[in-house]
Amino acid sequence: MALTSGARRPARRRGFAHTRAITAALAVIWVGVGLVSAARYVDAYYQHRGFAIGKRPPGVPAGRLLTEHFFSPALGRTADYEVYVPTGFSPARRYPVFYLLHGSPGRPENFVRIADMDVRLDTLISRGRVRPMLLAFPDGRIGGSLLSNSEWANAGRGKFESYVLDVVRDLDSRFPVLPARAARVLGGYSEGGYGAINVGLHHVDTFAGIQSWSGYYVQNRFASFSHADNAQLAANSPLDYAATLGPGIQRLGLRAFLYSGVRDPESRQLPAMVGLLRAAGAQATYRVYPGSHDWTLWHAHVDEMLTVASRDLRRPPRPVQRLSGAAARRAARRGHLAALAALAFQRQQARQHTALLRVCRADTSAALRTAASLTAGISARGTRIIDSHLAYNCRVAYGSGHTPLAAVPPLLCRRLPYVIAIVYHAVRRRAGAVTQRCLRDSGAPERLPNIRRSRARRAAGTVPRMLSRSHRRPGA
Image 1 (tube, rainbow, N blue to C red):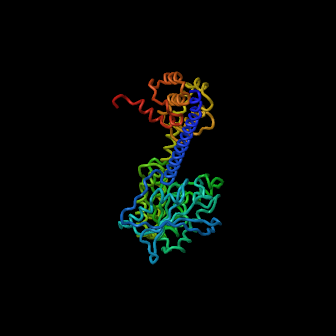
Image 2 (image 1 turned 180 degrees about the horizontal axis):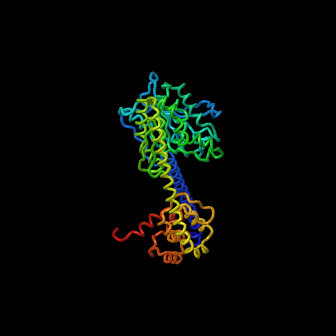
Image 3 (image 1 turned 90 degrees about the vertical axis):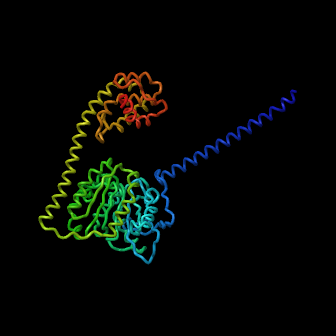
């Protein structure tokens, strides 16, 4: 029996070792599959931003997406751009071109991978809603960096405005296109929207139509303009120089379509910008749609922008007849009145912001005094999280180094002790008693939302929603 027992022990050890090896192998496979799945998910989101890939209708063949390389005199190097040749393309025919500038962060492929402009264009052409056209996507990245900001301008980081004109000339020489300004529309989103109107107004003789999707119209000392002087900023701020473009626009004609989301702060500039363009003689229109400054807004209006571009290409703008002195003064007055109205609105917003900030500072000071005794017991990491939360979510100026960035809802500031209590609870789970004391001192509800599993960052992001639920009256 002893020999038999001794002989079984190595066999058991070998069995255990074999089991451990199989378990380890399965764990490695499981982790590998998880990493691959995560990588695929991240890549899919990066490529399509969560939107479903556009499905091509039956019977609508795909066109071709081409990448063209050429030497750009403006950049002094070999550059590239992408061109989408639509379904039904024939070299024997000449086509207009819709040029599109991407934003930052962004790249030329965004118009195809996220906006599905290739599928949408082919579908609209097959249904007879738009005329056949080429889509051109210049590359405004500096050194290929996704996060670079060229501003599509001739500024400190390269002559990207002139590069756009290089693309026009190269495309005219390579493809069967109509080499005329009436056959070109320039558009873009975000930074590309700014670039479209800035480049388009600087070169009215090259583009007959302009589209700006959530663009901005005043340039600041940022990115490529970090070291710009006032004259350079003014020369690249359409709101500053649009009033001087009357002779060129009236002689050639120009159409412009500008839109933005209602929650986008830059939408306040739209009335003034369009007013100045109309005063200069352009056929300018603007829209403010529900939404913010993101792909949810731009993705929803791609078909509309393709239709607007097709309309502008089919019926180019006509030169404006020479106005009489009285008519010119009336047009200029309308533009200036629109600009003054926008300026008055901005000043009103600034006064409201100052008043709200004054209230918020007082409420914040009281809230911080209430929680001063608690702060001493929090770790350095917890204090940093609280500081970050107060500066980001409440936008309050307390202490040194924090600058108010937007108007502050006073109600949220009055609830700061409650907010701090939630963050404390997330940072230190054993601070339940401290949290309840903070709530009791601030007069907040005694019942704390269930946030045991939340982390400090997630708690900070969901505070307004939790507060609104906690303060809701029964039966409301």
